[in-house]
Length: 208
Length: 202
Image (tube, rainbow over all chains, first blue to last red; front, side):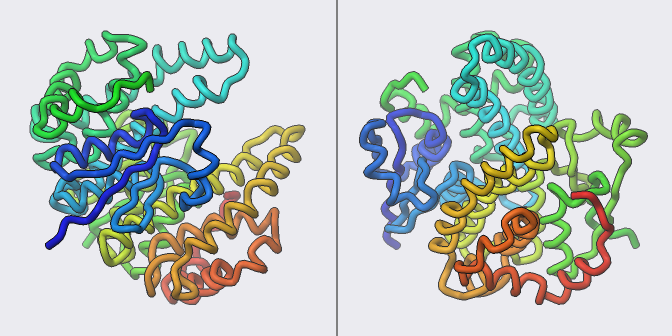
């Protein structure tokens, strides 16, 4: 059966497209990695289902919303858990990670006042983030001792979202996972995963 | 025998209601536990996966995050979409609706002096948003995806019921979306639930 043609549309950044790119890489599925400059966005916007990026195009059909895209690729490539319950465990991590990424975007992009921005960032790194990392560590450990993955016995979209979160938070604080040994080991496990390892070495290097 | 599923939330519709609508539409039994924020929540909170509700307990596992819960129940009940692609379309429509839900909830949460501004923001946001959803809606009238009821229809019904309180005519000229508002309560399980569910502020 012919493999579908995949295209990922996004800005030249990891951002909200990277969890999907990582899954395509893990599956060894070739894809067209379309990256447009900010000035070109007005040309692309009307073509996108909800006027937003990223978008995944598969054989001409467009799927938007970063988690929906990633979950679709995960399911197509057998990395979405083996049962509905395993998928739910992966999904809840993805949603928790997305909440944290939204909180970061809130202070970084949407807070115009510099003093309030610094305050929100401080609260994020000192309170919100450690709390959630603690939850994630506990959930990882609950899955067969924590030396594998968040859900079932394989990499899922939960891992690719988590790696993207890690890449953002560790820029700010390289020691951010010091208190979480299982999460620390998981990051290495994701980074060295076949397909992902090669992608990390060759992907465009961008600030975000 | 106790139901296999136990959902815990406050005595509100809010983020638990789409899942309750899924259970109702499918006629699937569950324990609809509603806890008191003041006396019961503090003890429960540390025993939840991320310090939040709703949670769903099933087969000794606790799931959190309202969309993860809803998707799980949708998949268990065959209301998630029939193919991977349909499921992705359902997922994207539900995720997008989070923005509309948020703008509507902001009105309720705003202080009195900010409420009018939030209402204006909803009024500015909703028309384009809904026009896109009319376009994204599949060819079978009354169903956003595919040819039968899905989670996307239930989520839309839940959010739009609230949005229509502020913008009553907003989908009058969007026939596919308007038809969804008829199809959903025509499901017997949903109709029974709507008639008997507890009255709550939101």
